[in-house]
Length: 225
Image 1 (tube, rainbow, N blue to C red):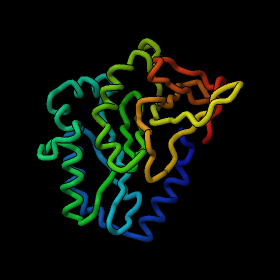
Image 2 (image 1 turned 180 degrees about the vertical axis):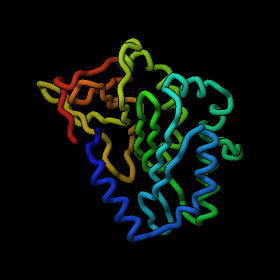
Image 3 (image 1 turned 180 degrees about the horizontal axis):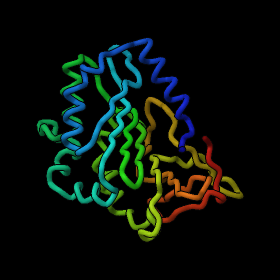
Image 4 (image 1 turned 90 degrees about the horizontal axis):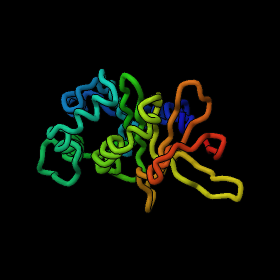
């Protein structure tokens, strides 16, 4: 997967839990709200608890397909829930994070969000603080806009979509890309340049270029993992 770091990520999670344990039951209200809002079974894992801030890894197991997710996105309820900025709106994901943060006396943020759908999975990694909650609406809108290109004209669904992937440097004989690594912030970075895709029967990841609406074959670039 992009990046190929399941073991290292799990190690970091376990180290954080050992160093700064937190009661998972403290997050039950937030978990139930996510399950109700996204029609999903939700697993919350404290990724890093620094005492004054808490980063979460969120897994949503959804009993619907990508097309159904985008259909839900078109409904007003999800539109209100995902839009950033209306902090007084109880539907807002940002409001939910602020509410649970006030209860736990910590700044709560999402380090990684994964949606496991029936036909694909979508993994969104944080690029700066609150980047996921503030950009989830835009990411879903981009999924809607680019769905036909991501699925190669609805002919093949990638089994994993990973974002973001950043262009690291351009060389004379090709372009090198790297997935976003765990950093505190990334000035000028966003989710709407390149995404990683995995298709059945292909060993290498593909890169989807949102600006040019094209999939770049794996043999045309190098991927740092």
